[in-house]
Image (cartoon, rainbow, N blue to C red; front, side, top):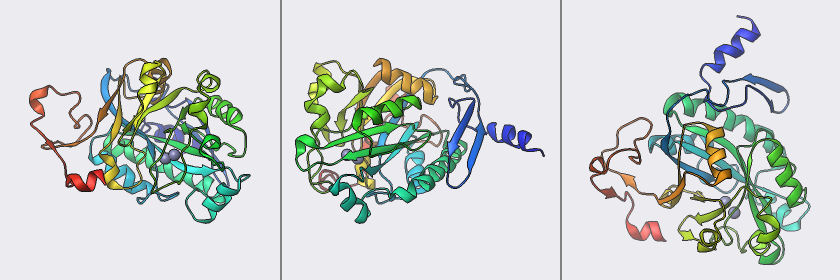
Length: 310
Ligand code: ZN
Ligand code: ZN
């Protein structure tokens, strides 16, 4: 089989919604992929269960990328984005975090993109789940007012974390990816600081950003709803018990471009506090959000409440 045929054969197994021709930077070589157009699936709109803020063991998460794919795939999620921390190497705290293996190392970024790309294809074949590559850019200052965490969602190639925030947002947008403000504050167990910079400069950043986290794990930030800013809700997943947390629901076709479009336009987006369902059946939509209420007998917490809330 010639290379062009091989590429096209591969494309049959691609998730829909990717660009027709995509250049993907991997170290050391460049790989060209051909995939169906933005509306490749032609699937009807459904309520899609999504989580766009997930950490793997490439930064400070507990699970590997394949373990995350299986964890979410088995629960019937429709779309996830893996967003490991990437620190600004120009900031002392960023350097220290990288040394402590709390963030992606600069030399790991190519491998990180390649591994998620491989898992994206497997997730689609096995679970019909969309997997996006993301990064959480950490701009850690010495005070909470100078610290910011910024999500790049559905990146096609790495972005230099030492650029300033408006430049990073511009690079994210050039790739067709989303730039989203992470939580204004964070659990004490992970990063010691509140991350208020974007939130305290909302007038400056609202026109630049695609959305804000209206909810992060167990916390909900009413401010975003009151101001009618575009929103998403995420786990900020670091370990399995973090699955019991706020999530985004999007009513659209199972397609990365359609999902991003809904978020940008702030249409057909809702949030839900996630619990596992008893009697779930394998396959897409088994989370039950697109089923009639009678199909949802009751909620089940697989972990005791004290473990979930601690
Ligand atoms: Zn964060
Ligand atoms: Zn995070």
